[in-house]
Picture 1 (cartoon, rainbow, N blue to C red):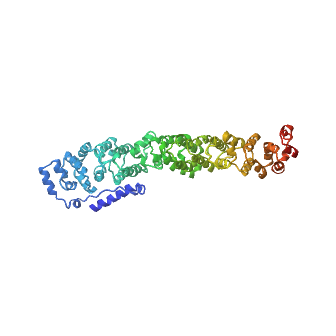
Picture 2: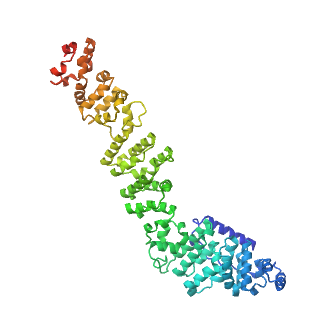
Picture 3: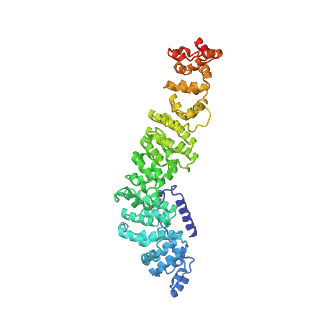
Length: 565
């Protein structure tokens, strides 16, 4: 007897611990064989009979075990005495094998229903291993022989669940649940049982709750060859179906399982009933997200505090299945983060921000819409320069997927960000700009000049080496306003070296010459004049115009320069 009980207990533990490893279809409903001679072999029957013959008090009743009662005169117990005995036995948490309980219930069968009703009024809730075995035995003694008419009667099953077995339902074994799933309930009576189990859910641990779904709900709603197997026609809409058929155990189903049980389920209609885990599952199934409205609904029920955990799951899937997620869907996910992400809060560290940029948001930036560029840059508000650099870097990593208008918007937002030379900390200003704009272009001369604070023009321009200045001015289209080039050379201290050493295109020389011509004309020593005309401007003089040698231009020239000219 003890060995049998130990094996059952171990099997029960394994089923509850690893519910996903053993599907309900691999089990059968097991009935308990009762051998009264074996159970009662060591019981002194006369002692109980003699005691109760003179003392029928609660104390006397409860001083004997269920085994002793089952092997003696249990069939003589009145309903009230039986209810008292059930209460004290179950409250003692003494565990008896299912075989003992079944023998006991068989003996007290005439008074059992009335006793259970009384017991339910005094002990509406009970949860312990002792109750679990009693419930198994009750099923075999009370439920197994019900007729189809009784199983499909809402009144009968309602009374049975509420007034007879209700207090025991917090401790269902996997065998009880699986056997229950095989009963010929109607959808109505099945839903009554689900409600009864749901009423006891708070007394169940997580593994028990999982077991209710795995071994009762899922098998029942997956019946083959039964009209309306999923009980979909008896409910009005997806919300009602989920609440009526899964009750308080819906959270233990995956989205795939819900869809299998009810192929017509509208996940968008039950979002507020889904758990956070189920919402994450839903978002990783692109077939469920038809467009912007669906994504907005999903994100509407996700708390902003849960965004990180949500996208830790969803973003890798979007990256792996990018082609299955439309641009509209990805943009709506991104918009929700930009609207509610609160990245400017001090609580979001640079490390956390980096994780958002490189992992969580990166898949959403592929084919980024031009309209989202400005909001995306705004998440760097009140953040460090490190964060701003990361914003541009992550966009640069996906730049091959971006449209021309999106790239132009990124360039314009970088220019806006750099106003006042923000985040420049020394070194070559040219390299700073190059490392900031990355593959999104480079500011033309006019834009570069506009970025320089008036009081820092000379300082910043003179951080640029002559070779860097040559590279800058040689870029196609960088000079769109000749006077701006002259502003550079009016503050640049290495003009002479630049002219001597840097080989720039002819159109650039033509633009530069008017800017440096006054310097050549004002040189006052012969050696300086020779350097200007023979060395520095050697490749520039062919671009002299009549305007540059007009009387207006040369009237302030030194005599030596004039003679050289």
